[in-house]
Image (cartoon, rainbow, N blue to C red; front, side, top):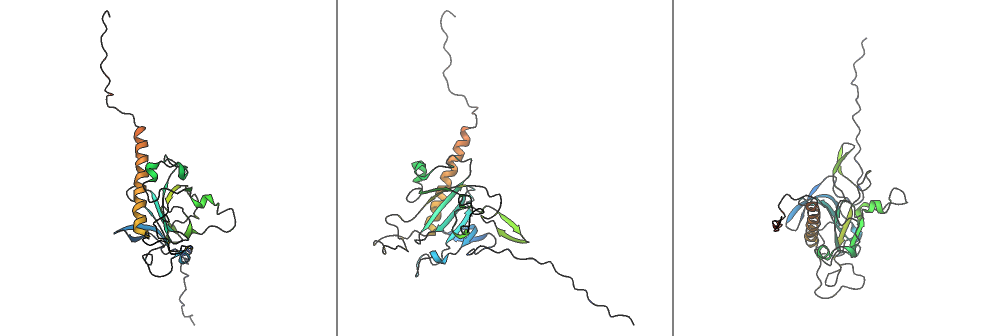
Length: 244
């Protein structure tokens, strides 16, 4: 008697979704509304431990947003600090004239571009903390380190994280918003003075963009000096001397 044919079970391809770092809200670039516009955010983090208590302008804000400014191509980050304020950062590569400069060495014309002046100048934290070599790594949700492209991991599109290999180093210039006159939501010394203003993400975003444009202009000026000019120098014509 012939055996009844049986259906062969074909094991499907097992694909495991890559685990995202704690607090990361997007597995691919997303549109993020800010300052009456929309940017393509590479990372959007929520960090409840840094979120101010109670309702306020911070209620609908993320706690870390990383993106690349379209006009300049420079990486930018908005990051909430432990005191509840938001700081802004712009990264430049080794070819930039200010790469490696300390905050107090940044020219005044650049520093004054942002609120309170440039107060932060450091390399990518992934390299500065040597997270692969020593103990517990610094969490991605708090790092000032760039994410510049989208990669594919196990058939899932996901943003680059600072744990990726071959991570290019950048030099970050940043500013904070806890100066006199700024509202500090998690101020341990009290509620601050009457009239203090909370510097929201729209404010920080606008400052990041201005700083990015200023830093980009320095690169363009440096490049122009390297290009030989073909225009006449405008020197006076040689004069004829008698007897020659």
